[in-house]
Image 1 (cartoon, rainbow, N blue to C red):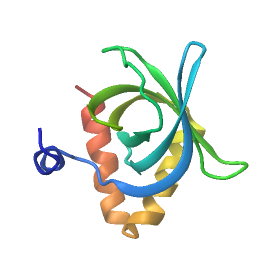
Image 2 (image 1 turned 180 degrees about the vertical axis):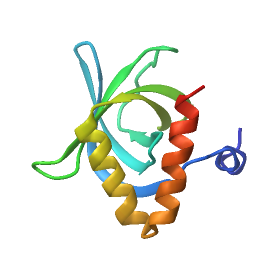
Image 3 (image 1 turned 60 degrees about the vertical axis):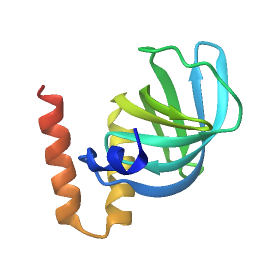
Image 4 (image 1 turned 30 degrees about the vertical axis):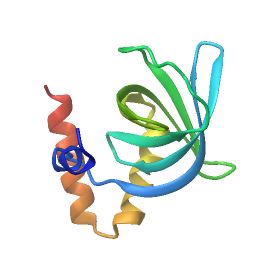
Length: 126
C-alpha cells in the first residue's frame, strides 16, 4: 500500500518527533528512532534488521526527557524496509498523558486534539 493511500485511512493526527526509543520483546532489545507519533500508534526507523512475529506484542519505550517516558505495548501494522508502523495496544495512564501533551503541543490546536481523542474513544468501543 502506498504511503499516500495509507495516510488517507488515518484517523489520528501524527506529529513528527525525533526521540530515542527501544523496542523490546522478551530479552531482545532493539534501539530505534521515532519518526512520528499519534494517539493510536507510531512510525519508527529501525537500525537493525529484526524479524517481527505477526500478532506479537512488543514494548516501545520513548524517552522524551530524563523524567518523562512513554511506554506502550504495540503490534506491527506494516513494514517497509527500515521503517515500521506500530499500533498501540495498551499504555499506562502516565504514558497516555505524556503522549496527549506531546500531540497537543505539536498540533497547536485543541480542537484537533479533541477530535483525535473522540476517534480514539470510538475505535476502542469496537
